Image (tube, rainbow, N blue to C red):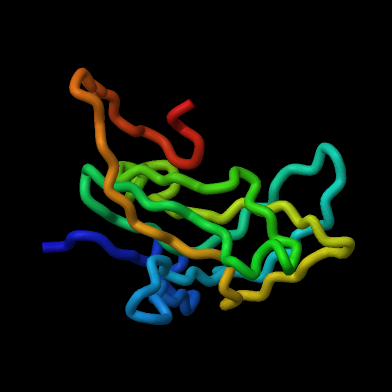
Length: 150
């Protein structure tokens, strides 16, 4: 029985995508690599964040989610997550829009464009349990991918 983990999304099966790993036994985060070369332009007002594909989807329990987090060295290199922390619900996995492919959304706060190469570690994933209130009665179903619940 699968509890939580990572899989390669459809369309990336032959692209040598590495499943994330923790580097030490006490690490909370699984290091995630870029699935493609991407250039993150330096920031200017009005620029949209750059989405870096991972080629991955993640599965977890119904009472769990996972967090996309910047690495501690990210800001020093100019990486600033557009949403601070990405929170992905368990029902994002395998959705019909994009198979659950998760991306990291970054702004570049350095003074030059940043080149991200395929295989560069771009962030980390931490799995997390969550709680609901006594009067919770959520009954909707996810039908789409990225940003589909607003």
